[in-house]
Length: 113
Length: 113
Figure 1 (cartoon, each protein chain N blue to C red):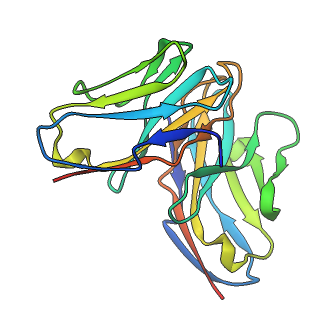
Figure 2: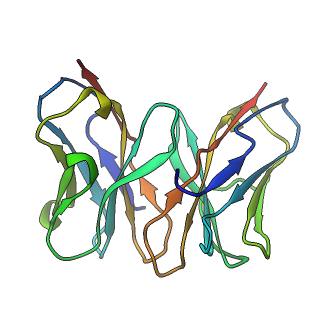
């Protein structure tokens, strides 16, 4: 158990819908990272937040957005869902921007039908 | 763009065989290197990491990796695999402290008892 929690574990929804994935980092960790794991793209970085502010952006679609709240939990919002958005979404956390090691959560498996 | 390549997509070994998984990255500057493991149905776990110093790094569960700067490589090794090592292995790099992880495509290891 890494100490990073993600909810829900599984999510099944239809095309065109909007979903919110939630991540709680390890206690004391200020950085949160979101990654997408799919069969065709592998593991791809989406976005990073540090202490409530966006720090880095990767291959994140405009239909996707994220935020980090004052209590440091983070949410990833996916809208206008398409079949190709079906994937495993991982959240990771690290203590600060000065530490490299990231601790991963169990992931949310999103299935878009 | 920076990338990470893992040479083997699927490796099948018998128990007690030796393992070497290849990883190469394309970036000329300073990198921090990682190997993560994903057991079936579980989250990513850190096996080992290299930031600086001794290029031979020892990790958990008997794994080790060697950083060869001239070859841009960070190969993972284990002298004798066990059935419980069956998992997917990911090589990853960060280009800056606290930065995003850039992952390779992953290598699926199947160990036959």
